[in-house]
Image (cartoon, rainbow, N blue to C red; front, side):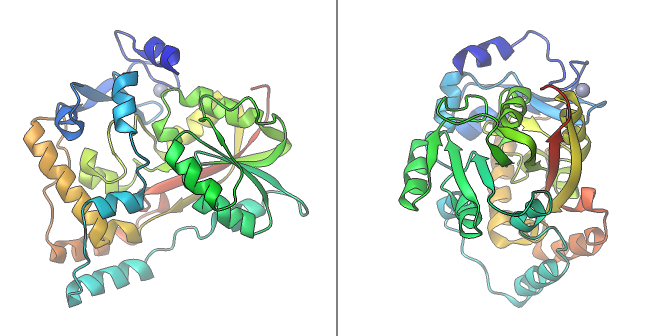
Length: 335
Ligand SMILES: [Zn+2]
């Protein structure tokens, strides 16, 4: 890992997909305050691929600090001790957002459409504490997980799951190649210092007609446009890549994979009290960190104005409405 991180730090950034030229889109001096690191970074953007990435990448030492504990959505909310405010206005907002959330349902149902009946072997890379993997196991899939964080592996194994230590970029040697019908990477690629290597590794695990399901935060969404680097899913430092639906398409083309299907989810979450509070804290920290080449999101809005956001966004096309975008892809050539 250390070697590939070091080699990725070039003097001039170039696009991680097409190697073309990029422009600095966000300056992040606030990153050092946010994570008590001495890092000053920019998010560089390729307008051809519509993809962004943190430059320079966090050093291996900074990375170790950023990942010193497994940090899932539940932990983030708990860390802030957020209590929902059960006012009428908040309940109305959440109820409306729930009714207007027409994103994809279960990933299991989505994926099942693309695999043949019978015994199905699936591998989730970056399985965390195993919630998704458990759901697949309960649905009758034979599952194996891969996860880098020791505490998360322990929790997943306590659920009776088979989980190997490793990551998308450093697959465990014990994991069989060309042995799975499904490989799942859910909210993983945005963490990878070398996403091309991660996707190639994931494709190498597939049987000839196997499918890869990859989802990432959608930086083509109004959610990212409105909140900038304070967006819940921007999470700079831990996240080092910023994808859009177009970027996922370009990435799959680069590694010789064909996109079979596309899915979108997470609209309701943008309007939940817990999410709003996390973004408010992020915004305040960014303010203390000073400047940005683009506005780093707008100040926290009133709960009433969020109802306006609902009205403005509920009929947007899926690629602009939803906070997460996924593709189901199949290998077509030599990876
Ligand atoms: Zn590019």
